[in-house]
Every structure is written in C-alpha cells, then in structure tokens.
Image (cartoon, helix red, strand yellow):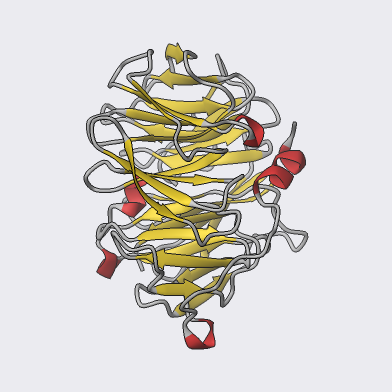
Length: 335
C-alpha cells in the first residue's frame, strides 16, 4: 500500500461534534520535542492538504503558508522544528520545504534523496531525517544542508514514524515490516524489535527512553505495546479502549494519550499497570494528538476541527475551525 491508499485509511472524514466553539472560528504537531515548549512560547502549526496554518497560543490565526506547497495538495504530511526555529514540512511526493524562523519565508526546498516522504523528524544536532515510502529508506540531512549525508535502508519497510532516544539513536516504525528498527547516530542498525508489534504506525519515547508503539495494523490493531529502555520484549500491553492506535502523545509525567482512527474517543493511560484513566468520548474519528507543557491535549477531529482539552477535563476549552481543512499533521513550535 503506497501513499494514496494509506491516506484513505488515516484521513477519512466523518461528522464531529463541536462543543464550545469559539465565535468566529477561533482556533484551538510529531514527535515530542515541540510539545515540551511552554504554552506561552508555542504556536500551533497545522498542515492541511493545501497549506500550513499557524495559530498563536491564544488561538488567533497568525498566518497561512502556501509557498512550495503544490496546488494539487499533499498525499502525506509531517512537521518538525530544529533548535533554531526552522520549520520543516513534507510538501509533496519529492520535496520537503524549509521555512525560516519567525517570518516563515521559504528558505529552501529539499528534493535530493526525497521519494514519497511519509515521516520527518529532527535530532538534537538539528540533523533532519526523512522517511521515504517509495524506496524504503531514511535520508539524513546535516543541519543547513540540501543534500543527504547518508541514506539508511537496512531493515526499513514503509517508515511511517520516526523518533529519537536520549542517546540520539533513531527509532523507525516500519508499517509493512511489522517492526521498529533502531539505528545509531551513524546509521548502523542496532536491533529490530518485532515481538508484540503488528502494523506499527505511531511511536513515542518518554524521558527514560521507554518506548510506546501503536499497533494500528491498518485500523484493525487493538494494542499499544510498551518496552523498557533498550528492551525488545514488551513489559506491558495496553488493550482496553484501543482500536487502531494511530497517534500517541505523552504528558510531562509520562501518562499516555492514544488517538484511535477507528474509534470515537481519545484515551489516557497511567500508572504502573497503564490503567485507563480518562476517556474523551465526544470525538468523531479522532486524528493527530499533541500535549503541551501544561498537559493540555490537542486533538484533530473530522468536522474538520481541532479541540483543546485542559488537563483532566473532557470538555474542550478551545476549538479551531478557521483555516482547518483536512489535517495531515500538527506540531507546536516557536512563534
């Protein structure tokens, strides 16, 4: 299954309830670094089918970015930030765009080594990693460069999600490979995690390098498996309330939010036994999730809109509709 088929799986539309909609459509993403910024310092970035919209921490639409984004739209989405505030976004089947800090003007477009990009992330040294679906590779671009320094291919089969641990090792979720492969900063394959994994689409690591894997299995999966740092065998399997766990997000205390593409809820798990702690049930076909430094939860649902839930609440304090079309990705980043 190549990009078009997968997008049908992950962004099918359905009606979504709209409680507490801010008058005038006032607003309300990928791996964990951006979500750790303070709420006062972070803007919300939403990659839609034809543009990227930026919102202030108070929900005001700041700008709409269309430069380098094809009019025909994007098959897949991904947003990441480096430490200097540069914004990286998947913008087509053969390109990743780089936008300057603050102004968001196009700095450059990356095309070399890009082949149906489906995932991106930036490591602690500002190196950009791009997962390519067409040729089952991850291209690594040094900070500020337009040519990849190396290409990782061993063990990769449909690299739908990327993440890094505290040592800078790269974790790749291989949807068709039924594995999570781990690579050293030099690109060497260190190990392949397969036990308990089936059709992984989401991965996240906490501050102790504990790994969480959403076993989406093309919408049919019903588990999130948990692995200790460096471990290959699950130490826990979360099942209650799980149905197609396509998006994961961690709170500052390592509680886990799960957004299921084949359910009408987002669920929170905590404690040593990963017990179900909270369910937000007023979401129709939920999409990407983010958690900010206040542990407020951002959830995309299919009106389309984005709801923001204060920690511990099942009622949204803010709802974004203005500028939201068909969400491909979300991130929190510097204004």
